[in-house]
Amino acid sequence: MAELSLVVGLGNPGAQYARTRHNAGFRVADEIVRRQSADYQAWQNLGEYAKIRLAGKDVLVAKPFTYMNESGRLVSSLARFFKIPAQNILVCFDDVSLGVGHIRLRPSGSAGGQKGMKSVIEQLGTQNIARLRVGIGPKPAPFDLADFVLSNFSKADETLLVPALENAANAVESWLKDGLEKTMTRFNG
Image (cartoon, rainbow, N blue to C red):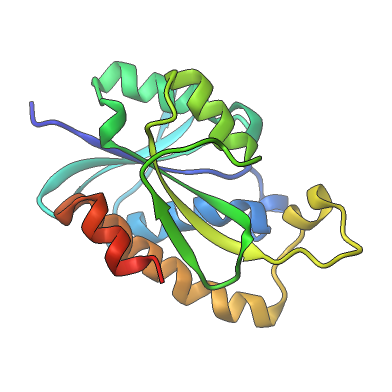
């Protein structure tokens, strides 16, 4: 069996969250799966995944349905079952410190306040997990952070987000094909 890679988009399940800022990671996963005309299948009541072939590699694209704070449960379950090492995992999520329309890749680090990434780090027992952050900020001063990330994008921000999601999907393909360092040079602008 060929070595698998795992791309995870973080978000919250349910129609009420579908277009919220916190679901930028889900939307990256959906863009990748849409491009491949693939379908998701359920995984152990923890979420769903699609198995695709991208950049010449076998890839699982997954979305946890455990809500953001428990995202690591799906990631660790898939990684254990399919024997996917941490270096073959890329987690996509929203970042309030990046402006809408921007993406940034990093090879490792702390969760930076992102509770879904914190759960992934805790469940896998390492901070050495590549991540692709999708900008959803900046947060306007009067907003509470939780209220802001659970709010929908404005029409103007949605216009900036759509090409960023496409760019993020391109970055995932580049990560698979060319590795993280080259992808960071190409996409971290």
